[in-house]
Image 1 (spheres, rainbow, N blue to C red):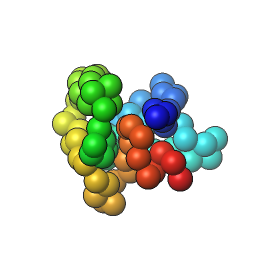
Image 2: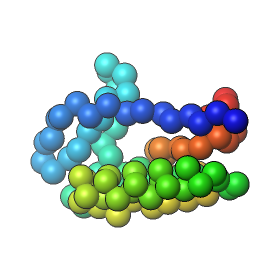
Image 3: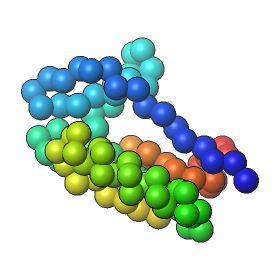
Length: 93
């Protein structure tokens, strides 16, 4: 079983309390603004112990870095962009 992780690279651009990451040269995604998260973390069940550990660590560090409370979900809400961890239908698409 493989483990897929979609990586977003910090561009270091901070403007008016906005944290941004680069997805493509022309596209930008605001992860959080004024303490409100604009992204969710998704780890579908059944999740491996490694994926469960990774999601807790990722949430801890992103919450600290962004000053927000990022939700951990088992399914995408569709309301915000998602960081998806583990082996699932999205990582295999």
